[in-house]
Image (cartoon, rainbow over all chains, first blue to last red; front, side):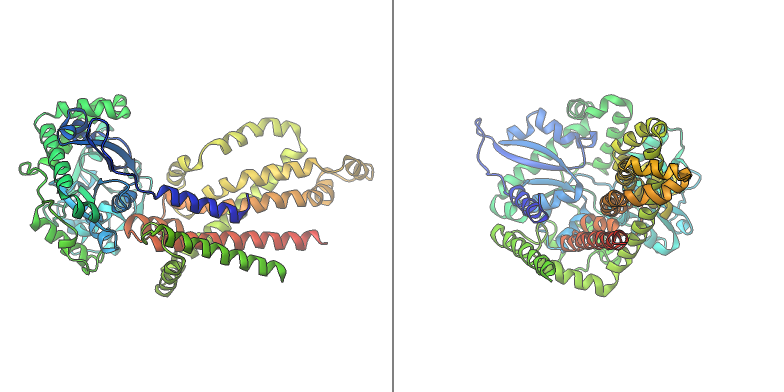
Length: 325
Length: 246
């Protein structure tokens, strides 16, 4: 194939891929919708599996298909209407919205910001100022891990120049920590610490919540869908919150649903169960609020993101967050 | 002159089709930016220096990785071509190494080699190695045996036969491998940066795509990689023509 033909074929593929699916009811009268989740099936997505299996979505008149996509693609797919809903980091939503991607955050999934600095208990400072001079591994200079790291440094009166950052774009920073290449890593406090503990490490954490509040991951929806079908958005948000509440009350229910949807759980069910329990704590926070959006945390997070230069503040907070009617 | 005109026409057609796709599809910038948007973004990226900062690192990785990989590959290819025993012993490993997806191995290579420039050059060199080694082996094997016999009868030693007959005769085929290898070096540099790096066009793609949601900037990085690939390919062709014309 000549280069010109190859380019034409590529463009044709893009054109084909970008056609939005038609929204028509299924045979049993349920509204088919697509939910885009990041990366791969995981026990942390248990509320969605429960909502599917236990009929929370069906009771709301929805037939939900789950698709796993690379995290940055979730925002684009939702904005373009190729997926009705998605799960995204709140800090990424701020950046995406500022970059002109028409999405809004409509429901909180994690009441606690899940990213923390993780390391051997003896190496983790209790105060962010103690990070000065340390070597820190992170997937890259993007995403919630990077936002949390810079927010922590700022809280300690430091900048990126005061630490040595080593990047692990394949998310294998745990290996870097284990073999001593870095002293601390960024990671999700419901995941990496448990994997490190399984390797025999006594883990310490420096969390973001107390020093630099940032809103956690939540549900996103495109502007068009929110404007055209707010009742659909409300139904999905409520059904998801109900399923999440059920998992918080009975993690066993979530684990059973996840086992059926996540093949890798069979490899190490104990770690998966521990991850789910740790995740429930992050969802629950100071008491599960059915997906409610905490205005104060968003305002503080927005200001932090502006100060750190991730966004310029040109798009107001009100255009990033919306409560479906 | 006609060749330049055809290339320019091809570029114009490509940009026109691209622009047409954005118009007909009504795609927003975050899915398919128009060429003019990418051009404007490239201008800004050049102005702020961010494009050169990342391009310089990738260029260094490509040059070092290609030189290291090509040197090792030509030497290995000569050995493979001249010795059936060496080929039988090494070929399974070389083929098996080629069959392993480097993307899967790259994060480990990054850790094994300390995660710096060395690790990225090694990853780049590994990707470059296979096509050049095989091309060299095939080239060496395709030398006219009568010529080899003639040199032997004149008392030429094995190294002399290699230097004076086999390598020069194999050059057209070796350059075929080098043409493939130099484009793979560009891919190798990006794969290496995706395994672990702070700067480079692969990193810029990640930052633009995952960090800034800046699709036009991602296209700028991709276009820069394409231009680098074309430039290095052209360079190999020029060197090939110069060498083979003598």
